[in-house]
Image 1: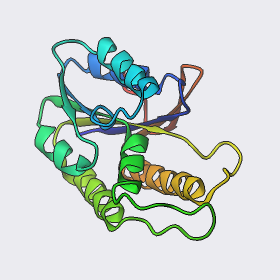
Image 2: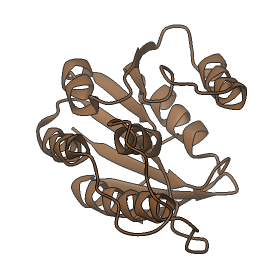
Image 3: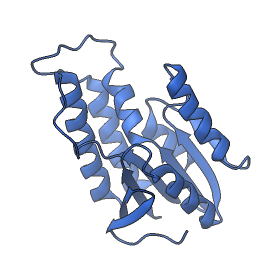
Image 4: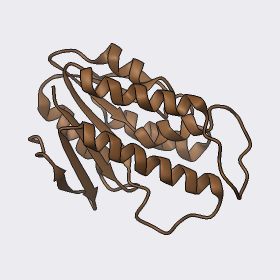
Length: 189
């Protein structure tokens, strides 16, 4: 089993690199899409459609906004590559899963499910069979955002990325479509 985390900013080329890795693997591919169920608006729907159009018809797509560890566990198998796109959207889904209103200032109470699902994800990374490629946004490169919920999101995304990178064999940062290996090696593309 090999696990690779691909990080980058919006439109950095991270998903395209993940798809090239999946294609080059020669394995059966299952894509776990965390945004497909909850498009939210026309702009997000267009992003989802763009990702769907790029994928080969032979790839199986599983849409799951919240129960990511369970979806990985069901999809993973020897000789298969599971591509998760993306951890950051999944985190946002979890952050807002309880429907609570979040204040602009003060401490944000995170939904209990967020911590449970995060721990489940980290546990499944240690036990999964087959290859795994996870895509995530690096949100912490800019200014500290306004609003308590925005800061909580950036903080939780950073913590999640650190924990997933530590659990993965490889970690790659993508900027301007160019990969920079942070840990391990870049599998052939």
